Length: 581
Image (cartoon, rainbow, N blue to C red):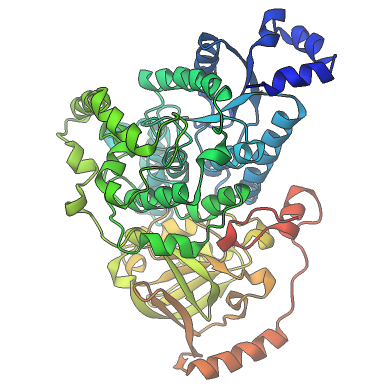
């Protein structure tokens, strides 16, 4: 095969001397050229260690006869931005990462790519970028951090903070949690958005089998990084092995079934449709809802389960999940190994992969004085934790385009309810009301004007944690928003309510005392009464029509910069909130 890099060298005579000036040797110029793109930076633990993995990728590229060039586009940390206006930049950062990858790869020639990321927007941004670039590519998920003492993990900090503000614990206990929740590098140790998207990269066939969500401190991860570098060089000389040749609708269906099995983050309903859009494939909330119905939920890992995320790899990781649900998977899809998914699964059983995982599980048991077996972490198919997936898309006159709930993290008491509306136009107002006990049992608490066009679609993490950590409110009220939630969020929380308030969606028209119907099994989210009095659907429609006539659109919240651009061009949350030009 003709290498793109060699063709471009003939067209741009300045290319060779400029690369020699960068440190390339003349003989390197004729090798297969691999772009090594990562989110490395000192921004947060999920990216602070990626330079070590980049070095291993470079070694693998060199071993296979190629030359690797390092490129960086550092991501931000949702956790560090939480509770401030900084979180408004979170979702749009995904678009900027994808844009920079497109620029890096297309401004200068490369024959293949390796993409390294760990976290919430870094991983989906890289997956969107590699789809646009569409050169032979391998993804290296950056892994998960270890749990702290007492198996403490970061998603518990919101609970500790809410308890401290309510006077239930002292500052010493809060400071202990702060100092021990992140003992090292890697994604936060629960099945939040970062962990979910690492799993999705492998489930789509774009990462090496077994490589997703390994402990970032594991020597096995270094070996996977080296192998990824070698494989990228091999792929460059193989026909029909670009991402667009590998990723199909069937690949996405596999990934969504894995998402159901691990009780993945609701943010995946933003990222998977956006990634699919880059491949020219349409995935919507309805796709998730269809595949989650009757799907098995198997993974007993936080926040919906009991254990920290590092045990996911010890139990066999994505391959072990796929083995349990393989009768529902498309086993003939192609992957970056150059083999089908079915062939990969068979090979792992023969090459000692599960035995290596088991040794690490034994080490974990010694460390925490427990006696976990693989089946305690990834449940057998016939002993599933749940049989209706983990996500539901609700619709009705409150959310004509849909709204999302992670029902595996919702109290059963709230699966069917009629609640009284308490609308707030910002998270700050709502959080204050919750913490000061101004919200009562039986309320449907609304936070609106927080969608992509409204304010960048920040996470409502602190409010959701304040509610779910309250023994009474956590099982008696619901939180409904056109914003989104952290992958760590638990409780009766419904997000992505579409159309969003700034576009005049019904959520903008809700008034104090309206009756709100939630029916998770029936997939319903409706306004069913006015001022506390039940009404017919026709009567509700008439009231909403009148309210819409009186509703006044808000001017743009942002007057300049990237958030102004995002507010003007973001697609609906149910389509993925990608930039539409």
